[in-house]
Image (cartoon, rainbow, N blue to C red; front, side, top):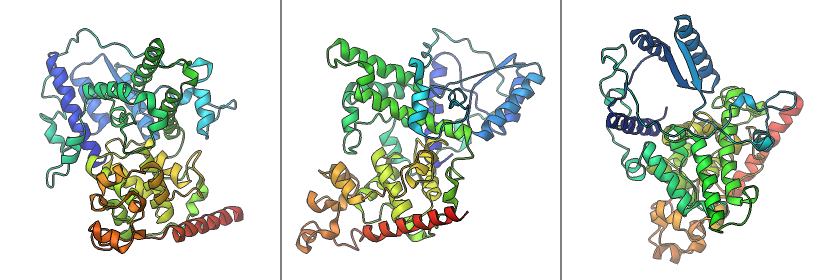
Length: 452
C-alpha cells in the first residue's frame, strides 16, 4: 500500500472507530499475518462464524481459501460476500466460457438480461456488540501503532486540506456530485478545471461507499429528474447516466482482469510488449514525477497529484502517455509512482489504466495513439484555469501560449516574469522527435513479434 493510501486508511479507520463508539462499540485492530491473526482471534473468542468481503487477486483468493479451509476444519462456519463490485468476475464469460478481453463486449454481457445489482441493504437500527478482551493476540491499542500517517516530513497537509474520509464523507460527496455535476457529466467530465467528475474513486477504493450504492443513487437521480421533467428520455438514452455507468464498468472490468489474469502490475497483458525497448532515464523520470517536464498540462497534473493525492482522469491519460510514449519509460515506473501517491490507487484500476494507455493492456489504446500535451491543454483547458492553478509561474502568460511557453515572444515572457530554463524548464523532449521515436519503437516491437 502506498503512502497516500495509508494516510486515507488511517483516516477511514479512525472515522469507523468513531462511528462504532457512538453505537456503544469499538474497532478492534489486529496486526500481523492475516491468516494467523484471524485464526487466533476466532479461536480465542470462541467464534461460531466468521464473515468477510471477498478479494480478487490470485494471491488474495488463495489466501482467503486457505483461511476458510482452516476455520471450517476447526468447526467455525465461514460466510463471504461481494461488498466491492456490481458483479462477481466469474459470473461473466464468453459463449465458450472464456474471459472477455474487450471492454465493450464484457460490459454488454455484464448488463445483459436487464441486469441490476442487488440493492444495498439499509443500515441496521441497532448493533449488539460482543465483548472482546483487549488482550487478544496481535491487538494494537491505537491506530498510531500501525504507523500509517507520515511523520517526518509530514507531507499530508495537502491531502488533509482536500479530502474528508470515511462513510459519512462518501455520502456527502455522492450527494454533491448528483446535485451539482451529474446532469452535465457526459459533456463536462473531460475538462479538469471543472468539478464535473464524481471524485468518488478513493471512497470506492476503501469501501467507504459501495458501487451498488452509487449505482442506485444515480438511477434515483435520473428518476427524480424525469419526474421534474428535467429529462424526458429513458435511462438507456440518458447520456450522462450511460457514461457514468460505463466508468463504473471500467472499474468492474479492471477487477475482472485482476481475477482472471497474471498480476496486472507486473506483467504485460499483451505479451509482445515484453520486447518493448523501454529507456532507463532517471533524470527524465524525476522531472516527470516532480512536474518539471516543460509541458504545462503534464506538469499541472503531476503537481496536483503530489499536493492532493488525486488527478483528473483526462490528465492522468495525458501524463501516463507522456511517460510511456514521449519519454519511452516503462509503464511500471509510472504505475509504481501513482501507487505511492494516489489516494485512490487500487490493485486493479491503477495497473489496468497504465497498461491501457501504454498499449500493453486488454482492449488498450493503440500504441500509435500519442497524446500531444500541447493540443490536449488547448482543447481541455483552453482558458488555462487548471494549468495556472498548479503551475503558477506561468499564470501571467496569455492563453495562446500558456500550453507552449517556448513559443511566446521574448517580450511576452519578460512581461510574465518567466525565464525559460530558470523559473520554468524548457521541454525535456521535443514532441515530434518523441513521437517519431515511439512509433519507431513499436515498429521494432511488431517486427520482433512477427519473427517469433
